[in-house]
Image 1 (tube, helix red, strand yellow):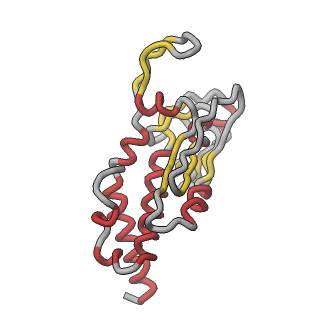
Image 2 (spheres, one colour):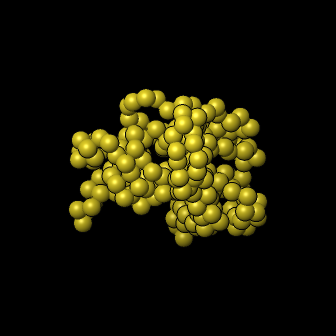
Image 3 (cartoon, rainbow, N blue to C red):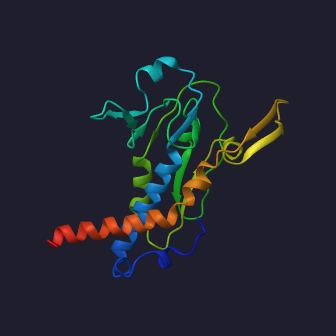
Length: 197
């Protein structure tokens, strides 16, 4: 997300207090991660999970269902609005957020099962972070880079691939300046409403 420093992007009002800056940084980070985690094209192999609505949010007034922002289920309905492809949910569940310089290790895909992700883990990771801390969000699934950037050729098992990248991380990161601006506005509105004006 190297699109200028965070401090250069936040408003003077936010810079007035460290607490405001941390609130905007954490809110912006969570919003970008939610964009990255938004299910996209799916190859859901568990028809029963899809038919029961696993990974979907509550039914809206118009009868449609959004994607749950709190806990993404193991399988998402095909054709979600994001760019992250979902089959078993392992790639989404492999997202790890850490504070500092430690990058979590890659993990191999289990042979079977379905997996879920809880956005509360992001909140917990950010909870004690100082403004100067580096926030790292990493997909630890060994195949995450192939999904992001694409892959053409043979893998280690001799399987032939010609797969375009989905750019689910890069396209979310491009939205950083707009998300920071939105989070600044939300923080200011929250303070104004508490102050009565």
